[in-house]
Image (cartoon, rainbow, N blue to C red; front, top):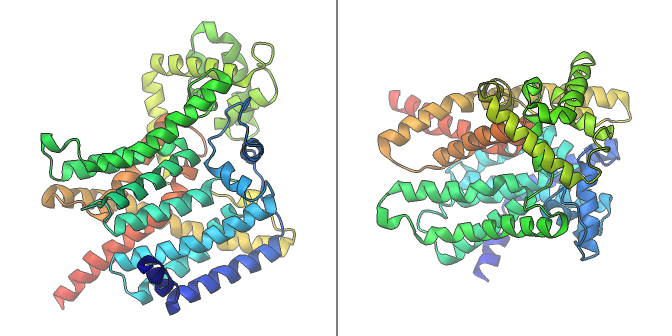
Length: 441
């Protein structure tokens, strides 16, 4: 009852009610001008798994995706319109968590209101909320995690708090298995805070349980259906994507992969298409069907090809990781090409507004990169685990890991972190720039 009263009191705040009203109106107005559901090449695979979930029978599923986001689609009865409505509602809940997080970080109610209002105005959130993609759902789960971090749930956690964090992290892994490192990073940071060998195993280990169950449990389901113990059968194909710029150096035994790969890569370069998708162009044209018609088997072979080619060409691989994949993470992902308004005048205005907004986001991200060094210096000086340090560690780890495992659309990996990056920059301005100005006065 106490928690329910707190929630009601929170929602009754003038600032929160205004944010929800404005959030609702902006989404409604934009959608009335758009009147479409955005579907991209990835969308159909989520929709397919949702159909299996609705039938309550996963037997025979080919393992394209993990079930976190398809569960949302299934809860919407497999209807894309209801799914998009759910994403709009989730977007409104996200605003509440953002506001609550800022209050916990000692921003005033007025400051928190305007910061969240600014975030709400960013068109990238609307773009993703209209799309059958995981991003808006991931942003919501991230917002819960950031809120828990701002409340210092991991400082002196109760069993209930650890259980709640573990459940949220476990569901995040079901949405996107890539994030399985989150709980280990949190556990490691707080274990290092007051490091003693006897404290290596501590009660925070609870937060690892549900993510591990989620990751290995779904991998086991895939093994039952496909014969491969992987979180997603895309794994092998994704590894092979990393070889795009040095595929010529692949072992000769993989000639059947290498030759079409080079052909489609060169065509992509000539036609100014996304070079990272070269292996996908080959796959979509069914050039591998004479060798493997079963995708899990093909992906497994592509994984072997990718691992061996990378192992034999490590300098080229790491050059690509640093100069392309890692740097691309810090760019702003552009969803606008997939979101076309029927009215050309409206579409051009939305495009112009987004161009300005994306430039602003890019500035925040670049400043955040610079602040990483500042907050690492503070950590080594003061040995304190702060919200800023956790976010910096989390984002940097994500930037490195995605660069190592994926090539293509790398900036999309950073989108769910953009709120946290902006908050870190604003915290620096509040706690260091503004504070120093007051001291000088």
